[in-house]
Length: 264
Image 1 (cartoon, rainbow, N blue to C red):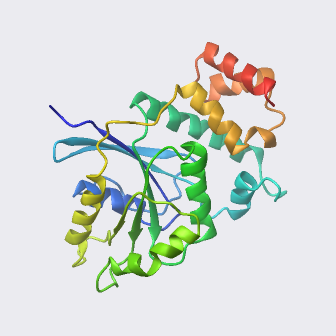
Image 2: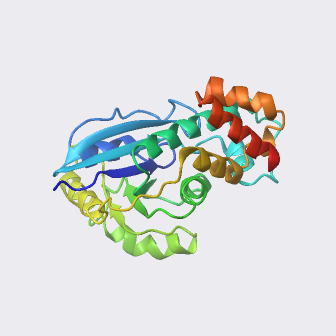
Image 3: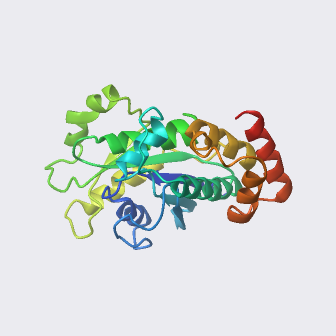
């Protein structure tokens, strides 16, 4: 009997090395390593590959990155900025729905993998943590940390010994961690592969977090507060946006529009 597939959302700020981590897990190049400039907040690339008899689905996501003004407006509505544009919110809504649809089609989420550099914990990194763990997955999905760029450490695990308690004090929960270098050619690369595979082996894929995609979408939008800053997106406009831009079924779009208007 084959083991269940594992569905993973990989997230972290620009420069953390998410694509390199995918290649580290796969044991070969499956993701192009390049600056994280390919899309707006919540856009993602889906990778599927087998590892030791199991199928891994990994969504490499664009979270909240260098656009700090937009970050604060998303997660801290009291801090407004005139530089924010409505189209940024609409793009985030569109990409969020695409991601939720894909996750629902695969049966839900098993694991969040938070990728961060082995340096200080930035405000952007903390906001990414909140967006994916608290907002998208309602704190219902195990989250593991992958700390990258540790090729300079004599023993990579020493980083966690020094910093693990500080992460907890900053509110970053974790159900496990791997200290790695994801740069091919480094002498600790093979040790890093072992570390991250041992981390993933602790999740069996037997219980996934999911709710129907439309309900998940509504839940996410309310928690994310996007509609609070898109006041013109109501009724018919919202219906047209959901059907034309998101490609949502007409009946489902009508139901979402009604629920969002009722609870606006």
